[in-house]
Length: 109
Image 1 (tube, one colour):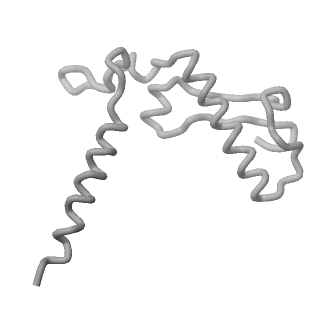
Image 2 (tube, rainbow, N blue to C red):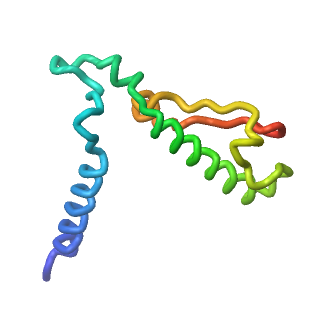
């Protein structure tokens, strides 16, 4: 009788390779740690204007989806023009804390 896990292992290996590849960063993005293993503070504050703009778009997209699913009494779709306040941290911080940002509308924050 063949081991039932035999067929599962190649799939698991392929999935872990895929995850490892998506976690790699371009060469110009600073490493979270220096060569001695200490935290690299420049990595925490690293960001680009393109990242800031795209992250805000993703936060707005998510807020629209949640507001629609919860049937919140908010003007939909939420757009940049009806956002009262927004916060998108630098890419390095967002990567470390796994937090992209937040927005505030006149009804919700």
